[in-house]
Each structure stands twice: as structure tokens, then as C-alpha cells.
Image 1 (tube, helix red, strand yellow):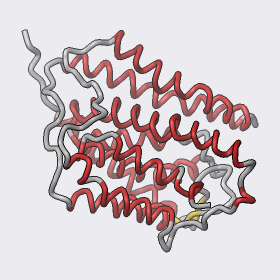
Image 2 (tube, rainbow, N blue to C red; image 1 turned 45 degrees about the horizontal axis):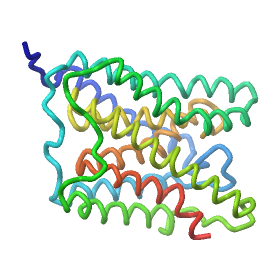
Image 3 (spheres, rainbow, N blue to C red; image 1 turned 180 degrees about the horizontal axis):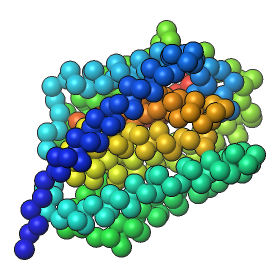
Image 4 (cartoon, one colour; image 1 turned 90 degrees about the horizontal axis):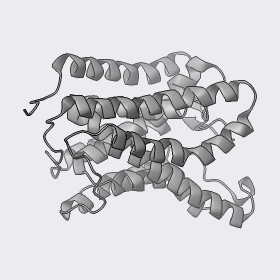
Amino acid sequence: MTEKTGTRPGAAWGILFGGLAVFVAAPVLLLITGHDALKPSADSAKELSLAGALLPALAGLLLIHGIPLHAPKLLPEVTDRRGLGRQATALALIAFLWPPALYLVSAAGQQALVRDIWALAKPLVFLALPLILLRVLPARDSFRLTWRPRQAWQWLAPIPAVLVFGWLSVLGPLAPPLPSAEDYPDPVYLAVGATLTFFTANVLEEVFFRGMLQTRLEALFGRWPGILLSALLFAWLHLPTHGQGSLPLTLGAIVAFQGFFGLFTGYLWSRYRNLWAPIAAHTAMNTLPLLLM
């Protein structure tokens, strides 16, 4: 017998209003406590203004919403809510438990160890382990990622939002100064590191947080609850690597910086179902400044 399902209104509304409250509270609290400029990451030598962090993501969200082309229904109908819920829970637990484990290592004064674990274990934690769990916890609904969208508009429609986001993030009036060659090591070492970052951050994080996790959360709770929850878990991912000193300040910063970026890329994925769009936005933020050195 088919298990007819839909979203759970109570849980969906709770996620929606709770998520919105966090995203409003984080920048407000940063402003009223005088933290209107923060480091984009713990090891960054330059600060980024709060407005400079929020503006690209907000402009991108408005452009996505304003362009009429969108994907109203590219998810299969949920017929096995219990199975899909087990998969979403397993993925959410990975996203939730991994950062505090590394944060404790970092708090113990082992920042170098955290960087090594972060780079080496990421493919195992966010690709191999999820694929194993999805195989062990099967659901009747098929949520396989499609790397080649069928419609041309799925390639064309995201371009304005990605371009505006990239320009505002890297070259806009509120963007931080571009790095100089003196800020980086040997070019060969830098090229290898940038390539690894592309695959482990730009691609892998979007595959896990948007393609795997958000897709299931959207199917279970609806579009915006799924986007908000996956964006918060994406922000939480940066807890051990984007410390700002105190824990409350770090939490506010990762929500305002990485969280709003997660809203932008999450809406890109939800609206167009072309995973290359959020990957391109992630690359613009992480890799484009290196190419412009």
C-alpha cells in the first residue's frame, strides 16, 4: 500500500519561522554589539564589512525571484515519507555532528590538525559516508542528482544572479581588497591548493548540502523550510574554521556570512535544479579572487 504523504504543516512552519528568526537576529546582534566588520575566515588577514557580506547574497536572491523562469516541480512525489525522513535525518546528523567535533580539536589549540583533517576527511564525511547511508537507508522515492538539466532555460536563467553575486563579492564597492601575490605561497602550491579547494568545497559542499540534503528537506517540509534548514547547517559547517574569538561572535558571523550565502545557493538550486549554478557561485566566491591576482 502506498504511503501517501505531503509536508507536515506544524514542523514546516516551525522550521520556517525559526530559521527566519535566526537569519534576522544574527546580523542585528552583530550590529548592535559593534561587530559590523569581521574576518571572512579565522586565518584571513583582512576584514569584510557586514554589508559587504550580505549585499551579494541579497541581490542574488532578488534576481532569482525576479526572473520568471523557474522549476516549479522537479522533485518526484513523496510516496515513502518514512524512508525519506530516515535519509534526511542521517544526512542532517552528519552535517550537525562533524563541525563541533572539529571545533573541540581547534579549541584545544590544534588548529593545524583541524586544517589537515578538514582537507583529508571531507570527501569521506560528505560524499562516501552519505552515499553509504543512502544505500543502507533506502526510500521508494528516487532523488538521484542530474548533472545535465534537460531544458536550456535551466542553464540560462541562473546566469544574471550568479554574475551579479560574483561581481559584488569580488569587485563590488563593498568587496574586500583583492589579494596580492605576496599574500600567497609559490604559484604551483597555490594552484594545487585551489584545485583541491574547487573539488572539496565548491563542488562537494554543493553536492552534499544542496543536492543531497536540501532536496530531501524540501520534499519533506517545502521549499523555504528546506532552504533555511540546509543553509543553517551549511553555516554550522564553518564553526571550526571561521572562528572569531568567542563562540557567540563566531555563531553570528557564520550565519551572516556563510548562512546568507547558503540561502542564495539554496534558492538557486531550488529554483532551477541545475547544480552547476550554485557550484559556479561558490567558485566565484572562493576561487575568482585567486584568478584576478
